[in-house]
Length: 136
Image (cartoon, rainbow, N blue to C red; front, side, top):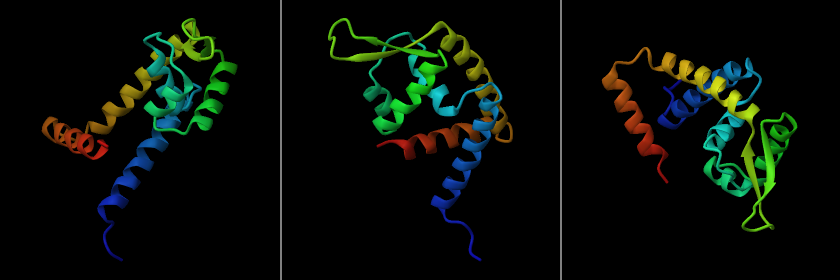
């Protein structure tokens, strides 16, 4: 059996990190996708669903379903845009702000643990390489 190729290694690393992040954030009661949405909304600037979908590289119907669940949980709310009443903006609630702080601490601890096996130089190099790969 041959060694995994580069793309397979990236996929395996992504799956491992995603699975473990989901597990850890799930202990608090939210998913990684919900955490990412809350992070974007934490500046308390409302955003349309389409913008959230674009920023998180999700299709709009999937984002709509995710936001629906977050509204039901009381973490975000839909508010008609005062400047254009045809648009609906998604805003974080006080409950969502409290949750995003907890989730961010948990995620930060997780990511810190991931990089614990690397030297500072290795971590910087990996971050630089992944940033280059992630560019459009």
